[in-house]
Image (tube, rainbow, N blue to C red; front, top):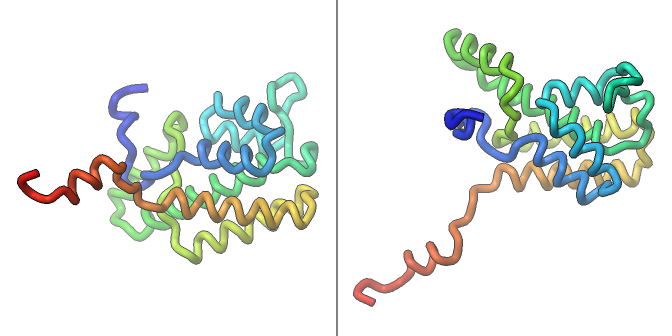
Length: 179
């Protein structure tokens, strides 16, 4: 990864989707962490494609939602990926044509992991609704689906929260002059 790739794009600054997925799965379905970790070796687009469609049985992780009933990982990863792409795409659609063209170039580069931008309350509510819809579609127990949806919302809120300075910085700012 180049030095430029280490600098987050301000349009998508925040927690990476793959990191949010891992945090949620670790809390709600830790038995699925090997699946998440296996998918992390792929870029986001390939990981979502492997989760969303059927694949060759000889491919690692080549399966579709119809074969993975009751797994949390596909629900979380697919819905977060959808939400991030839609949120960032909507922001770009409201911008000038040149920015739209630049965004298309960026989204074609599949090597950069997507990051969760700050989402509006309405967008977070839509993500929660989509998690519940997909959870039902994949056969998750309704109670587990509610817990999952709540955890996704909590993770999105944490991703959008500004970082707090560490205690050393706070003490330095609060120290009286001349001490």
